[in-house]
Image (tube, rainbow over all chains, first blue to last red; front, top):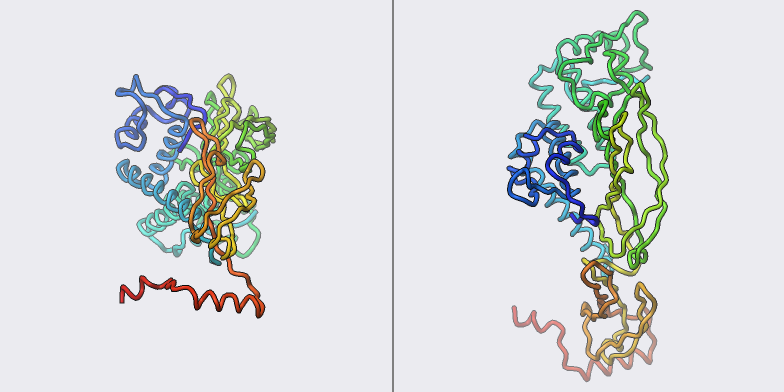
Length: 101
Length: 319
């Protein structure tokens, strides 16, 4: 996921903008669901894409009743599915230039 | 108002126990959750399921609902019984996070927040809270990614009045799309999302770039690919062809003895990016004429006799 405009957000800003509790954001980082720049919460810098990811992780955790390790796995697999779908769309488009599908 | 058969929505019978209801809900939630499903109506499906579960998992609400269900039934237009008072059981307690989005049917029975206060999938609006972020897709033609491009966009924003009721407002904005945007890029426009309540700041607007498929060019990173049809004799003898690019036509030399599927690189004619300029690749596709005549057939015949070429040489080695 590319951010065209890279303005980074601090830990406090992420919590404020998403309305997600600090402990939850720490949990999401510790599970490796997202990797902000910096070593400690005070130094963390988040990309705008991570804001969206945080909200997605919280929604899944809340609505599907899955623990955080499960959310990490689900998000990884969802990403992979998205990439495979994208690749499949591309290959299908390329192939259709040569043969009738 | 439409009667909602919560048992039917969850696919359980009216005698189902809590465990069966929970299992049914979880299964459907995994299927329809908007973050998981790519069905276009996943969000509304999920809301129905969440609403049904909210009622059926709670023995008090379920009993109230069962009473209504006996009275009205699913066949007819639903009106609450004349002496029915919303119980208020939807208020307080550990309500679902989607409660604000629940149907009028739900609020007519249980009271509490209903359709008029729908907050949208991205969540609730508490007083003093920052406005909601809005994400919307922005389709862009390949031609428009070559240089910075101005585009007028319009999108819907929820607007909250002082009583917390929501209406949808249309907003129009002129945005500058930087040169070299790629499919899936997000452009963040600070403060252009929903307005906050009171003094709180507005949310942001995220534009997610979608490159519109082009009839001639396919995108591979920052490179472009064009499929170039050529005649068998052009492949054999080589030649010059006129090739369209995103920025005008060029002359391209095809080398002799070219193959179908071979890529010819045209430097710098791809898409721009921050660091580099992509290339254009012409992928050759040898095409046979669909009709022939006697004299052409004779020529092919001569060629067939003259050439020792075996296109299936690999097969005879393998067998």
